[in-house]
Length: 593
Image (tube, rainbow, N blue to C red; front, side):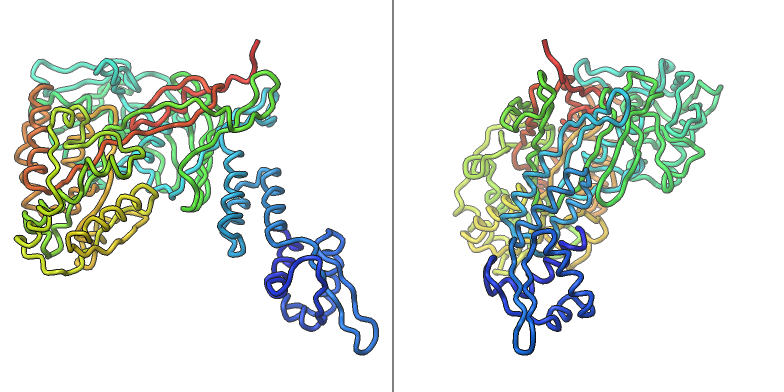
């Protein structure tokens, strides 16, 4: 914000609340100097500048006994909105977002300004080159978590890493098969204890160097060195041999029929061995990281990408305050005139039911009545899937009894009366103590938590809500944290990988909240998973989910529907993993016959 506007806001905050605009206010130079924390001489200079800009009218007092008069010609909201519009017109998105946090921005004004900001999101064509750059701006209402393939677990961060990095092979959900990635071919011996990958030649990292088999070996070694939460799935690898710059062999201690899944996942994104990820991000993906700070992440198309270069030149992902809506509005160029059309034409929407669901689980590291089976059965009744859909609706589409929608569809859902929950609470030994129910501070989660709190109160269960912004596994285990958590799991297209990763990844909610003896049940049950053919693997995963259901360790809620509101000029719509649109294939049609 410019100095004149800051001075105006400082004066108006101290003087204007007691009166209105266009009404003279008696003041002295000395009082204004105190408000502005400057000398009387500087006050006169500031007043002259404010008057030149039409912010105020200043009538100095002449002679002894004549008090000066200050008239505000504009309101605080008018000045704030004017500054915001000016910042937006100059493309100063960061400064505009910072202005939203100004204490003098009222909630109604913030809502209006966010609408203005949303209009700057979506597609822009900029004249920064002879042909113009195609830029897509989108928003997030939470800060990004760690962008490291060794540690990543959250869906959006995994999606972004998939745009920056590449894997040896890629999983194709439509055909349930694997396609070439950085490896153009692979083969395994007859008993699946040895795999060879043949790497493409001439593949460049974003920092310029050509990729070799050493990068693949060092990427795997990095998972070991960092003790990656996903490392347990790679425990069968005994030895890695570099047979040439473009051929690498993995020797295993036992047969592994799941090996390609493991090398198509985000954790095995190939990193350059000569770059420290803490200081520089360099992959071989369609986009390279141009900038990353607390306000924005900027991706730019990588011209030397080994595949098909993205059609969008730059993607900006801006962080907005929590008050910002999750709905994304896109203004795109008029296909005939090249001018911006109103948001009303952004009426092309796609729905994609997400794999996974929102669910409740319990903190078994904390002592309390939630350790009792009958108590958890009571919570199962309170967290009614049918009531969630009927009373809250929204993106909740079908009741869940598994993370997989097709498995949930096989179940018959019987919802007991709330009175049965009251009886189970009594039988569990509950004595009226207050339990903490934690969830992420997001709109739908807050809504669901408040709904649950009200239902719990109706049967005498006292619930205190705790909203958190980021999940920290060590903090969550402490005794002073929540007994009950509401979270969401979203699986990638390779759902078998997603499910086995859920039961093995030490950084997720399940691992953080179960005791070691509970975790060991899954280790034993799924020990033969990677050695088994597909049908046997599916049975094992179903049995593992059965353990969660039968013990009421996890209470599935509803499967969620994800929506995207898109302009009719947006083409190349391909839903990638986790249900996000694949930005590397998007393009905008700006002209038409």
